[in-house]
Image (cartoon, rainbow, N blue to C red; front, side, top):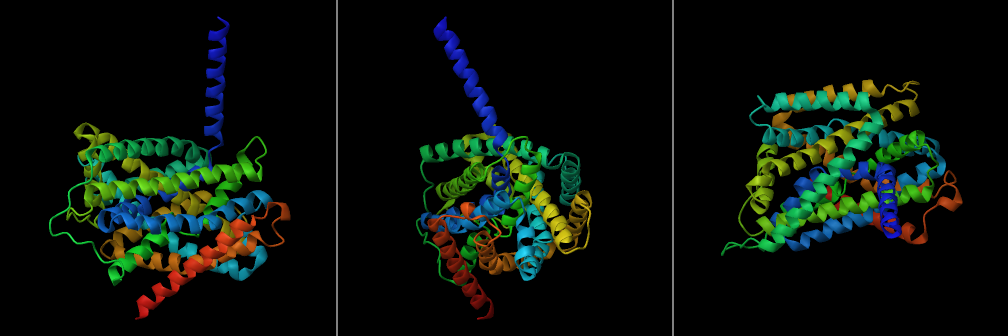
Length: 426
């Protein structure tokens, strides 16, 4: 009886620890859910499907070399109780103006691109219920806007925990099955595509630029951490916040590799070309999963893929609304916190972008890629300067190793950005 009682006590303690672990998940998980968008579902899958095993190197390098810039956002916020935006304003007005410019471009391009892909997933799952893609897009904007305005941060955080868990389990099951079934046979006349031609280099630039996400998202993570601090009933230390974020970041990198591996095992060398059309791509991606798992899993996988993109739209929409409000306050354009108005404004503006620029969406995404990629090393330097400034208490500044990694990331992204500019003008 003592043994049984002890066993139940241990089970109870384990359940409490698991619940406490999930309760502490927050901004790091939001970061993961926001990053699992086009960079993972689209670009990672295409990297494996088109370019083969060595393309995992840029994915891993991008995740490693961008890590300090996102980590600094979390570190600065918990060390100072201020957002990165507030830190930029105190450090240099030019920092604030530049960050405002990059986010303004993102607000009308990145969000529109995310909603376009999510619309494709929605039409793929609810094809019998959806009258048109424009209707599906409108429903998504209305639904997500209502969720953000009604639920705010708490609902966002709680719902995404389950969405990411579903996607993770689906991906792991698919990886196991594609490994058991072995790699798809390559065509007899298959030859690997060039890496160093214009098409290959531009793909790598897009992959690195959006992997795991754009550097300006470090400010988004900072605002989520600030909200977590306000809502938490217990004190969150800098170290515990960094541990939670590091877990989310590792999950993001792990999921990118899983998508890459699935694309490689199921499509590389087969001659199959993944469509650039969001609706067709959604069907193709679902087809990859169901081929390996079986027809019975089609609905489950379709919903998991839709959930991944829905969570990305939800978190990115929330983040951009927060950062727009924060920037308006720092620029003295408002003293209030019009979060609901910002959510609705972004919904209306991006719906109009998708409606009126549907045929030139590629050009809009190119603008977003240009802004995010070219300014990435500058934003990385801004975060580096901030976390090593007098604003950050000395005891909370990064280690020497992290400082070296940050400098390496700035150099790496600068070189890539300069080469990208050279390709544009050459």
